[in-house]
Each structure stands twice: as structure tokens, then as C-alpha cells.
Length: 230
Length: 274
Image (cartoon, rainbow over all chains, first blue to last red; front, side, top):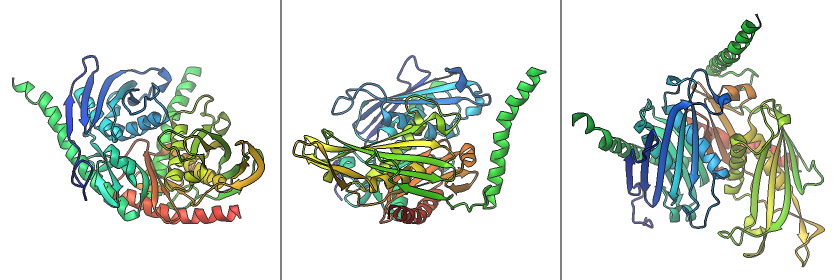
């Protein structure tokens, strides 16, 4: 099958990850995933505000996903909409199981994702970037959390749908995993798939996540591996 | 003295849920639940349609102690620029203060937004509502279908109760026929509904998956997964929610159980709509 950008069915778009790109944030990451351009920042652990959200035995994680008004074809009204609120919630669910939250009782870790250019798959790219930013902030984790979508276009299950494919596609399924635990921590789906196709798509997305995982590790190596020997 | 008592209350409030959780997990390990249901068994589901005269479509659904109204109002307006020939469905959910001591007044929070969006996705992606048939004039005027979910009593598993309520209300909705000036007349026409999408939600407790979580099970959950299926047994929406993860096998188990139970629930819906 010929894909719009000539990729194989199991091939990711070109991905570029850079750790530590923002000065003020405790950890940060920039990711280019195909035509997506996304920044992720981590602040904390810090004092919990508002105070009533504080937990005695662990940290809390707050996630904000936002798209810049100019990031999409038609100007988007500034500030998070309902879609963004939902994405923030599922991002938290995807990332929190990997973080050792009980290391930081009564504190808060704040994550924000800003999409400056969107082209399908922003939540996956966002989670991938946040995970690198968390590592960049030195927050202890069980593992990184790579993310990647699979979907169905023209009757075929394929990896990492580009915008044109998503628009004409029959289904899209974003997935994130914790590779060392072999656990799926993000799973959403819309479209129509048979039971067999669901299994195929999850399996393909998990393989994609493994590739993204390597790119995350490479990005952290580029930033940190040389330093201690210099 | 007072101080000590306060301390004890505080400690208990944190420890009790942990004890409850351990208990529910140990029960589930043996395939049991506190209310003696099987792990893949629903609580009693009661569906009543046409319960509000003022709404063009309505349903009242009880699932265990959870009680939800769905009301449909149909209006006309402009289509979205990217879908000029499609009517519009807008789903909202309100978790009103009446329904639980910790629900607060005000704009919808994360939980309400997620409930509405997951319910909406299941129905939308199943193509149950034929949005093309809701076009009055391309690019200019289409029908707007407002689905409002009003949670009256929260006893766990809002997504499934809301999903069944929304779908049942849509399937029985009678919208006004428009006159030559696009004004609603007294004449009625059924909404073009061609499928019945049903969401099934599970929580993961320890290593067990429990269908249709009760309030207690939901409070103890690590994570949650919803699978919506259509008449042809296609999966049309999925959502993993909350903290925690699933293995591929667990997800596929949820898909299979949802397909089977979804069919049973569809039967109940059809029965209620007769």
C-alpha cells in the first residue's frame, strides 16, 4: 500500500527530540514529529497550590495541554478547550504510573505541553516529550514513557497516521507504554475496528513505542552522557 | 482531647480506603465481588424513554444506584466549516451537586468533560446518528442536536449509564419538521438513528478486571477502561482512564466482554424503546 508520504505501514514519521531547551523550567524538551512542533516543560516538585489538593503520602501531578492559536489551519481560540482538558487528563494517566510519586509527599509536579504546530498525533508526541522533560528535571521514574498511534486507513492497519491519513482514516488509536513493565498507560480509540484489528493495531503501536523509546534514550544521551567524562 | 479525636478521624479517612481496596482486590482474586456479582456482570439496568415532555428525546437510566437523565433538544444553526453537509451533535454532562457530596457547582470539571467526550465518541464513531441526513441546506443551515446528560445520583460507572441514556434518548427522539422559513412546526420526524452504540466500562483492581464498577470499586480503582461497540460488533471507541496500566491481554479481554455484554444491553434498550 502506498502512503501519502511514501512510508511503509510500520514506519514512523521522522522524529527529532532535544532535551533541556528551556531555561526557566526544571526540565524541558522539544520534539519535532513529522510536521508537529511541540514543547514540554516540567516544574517541580514544588509546593502544592491550591493547598487542598495536597496528598500526605505522595506528590500530585498536574498536566496542561494547550495548542497555540496559530498551530492549526483555522485560528483556535486561546486557552484549553474541552478536547485539551481531556488530553490533559489522559496524559496524566499515561505518565503518572511511571513516576515515583511517593518520593515527594505534599508536593506537586507540573507539566505543560504547548503545541506550536499541529499535524496529527500531538498527544503522543506530547507524552513522549514530557517524559524526556521529566528525566531532564531529574525526577525519579520507573522508566520513560514513549507514545505512538496506530490506525486504519484504506482497510489497512498502519503506524503513526499523518494528518491527511487521519482525516480520511477509518480509525485512530493513540497508545503509550511503560516498556520495562510492558504496560499500556494510554489507550484511546475512535473509528471502527474489528476485535482482530484492535489487537493488530495495539501490537503495531507498541512496536512503534519501542522505536520512540530508543529516540528518547538517544536524546537524553546526547544531553547527558558526555558530561560526566568531560 | 478534641485534637486527638480529630487526628484519629484524619488517619482513619486515609487508612480505611486502603483496607477497603485490599479487601476488594482479595475478593476479585477469587472472582468475587462485594455485591455477589460475577466480575463480568452488570448491575440491574433500567431504561425508560420519553420521560420529559419538553425534550424532543429523553431517557432515564438507572444502573445500580446510579441515575442519569439524558435530554435531547434539536435546534438549527450553521454547520462547522470543515463539515458543511453535516448536522452537529453536541454532548455535555453535568455532575450536579445533588448527585454526590463531593460534586461541586460550576463549570464541568475534568471528570465531567471526559464522561461527555467518551459517550460522544462512542455514538459519533459508530455512525449511529446520520449527520448527513440532518443537513437542511449545505454550508448554511443544519440541525444541531444537543445531548445533555444530567447525573442525579452517582453510584459508580457514569460513562455506561450516560452512554445508554444518551443513545436511548437519541433513538427515540422526535424532531420538529421545519416549515419553508426554517421554523419548527408541530409535525414530528424521528432522528435518523441507524445503530445503537453501547459503552462498557471496567476497572482494574489488582490483576482483575471488573465490569460496571460500583461506587466502592470505582473509588478503589487504579485504572479504568471503556470499550464502546456497535451493532456489527465493531469496536468504535476506547478510553483508558486514570492512573495505572493494562497489558495487551487485559485490553483484549475487555474488548471481548464488551462485545458480548454490549449485545445484551442493546437488547434491553430495544425492549425499552418498544
